[in-house]
Image (cartoon, rainbow, N blue to C red):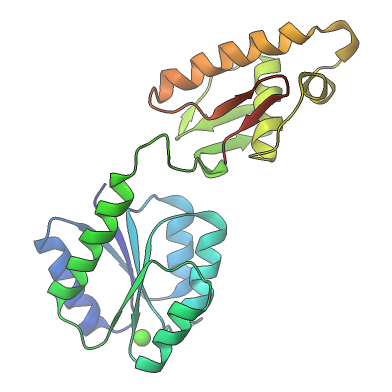
Length: 225
Ligand code: CA
């Protein structure tokens, strides 16, 4: 994926960056405010975000913190002042790198390529599967996985919904039955296992390189974090 979100309020700087990105084969999307950037990120997927610290509506640090609540997308800060670097580096705001103005477009694209190599280099199974890959639509009783709606039975839907709500938490079979079944007393341990099995097959049909459900021997199941 080559989509890059550029958040920069100065048109002359943005023009240069957009031009450099296109030359390197990237597809840049430019916006001028933090608010616009967050709206874009909520609706689209980007490979990386270039984020100016000094924006007209909010500062880049706050934008980055907000981004981190919804996405693990790499963030590169663009800052006009050297003394801001300490904040970028020192504060744990989840940025991946920074460049200081004035910088050459080549300097920036080199950083971007390095970050993307890093994030693409790690194996798919080693990457954390954020709950963000799932989207639960309560009203339609529908769960989307990587944007694809899953065709789930009632209990598959309920089971997966329980797991998605707390990624990393291990649920025993008994607990899953209590949370997902209407009459848990009549269900059996192996009923949960059977539903997990069909659920996994449906998830694999969408992405065969991922298995987001973990089995904990003797304990139960969890969703990978
Ligand atoms: Ca600015």
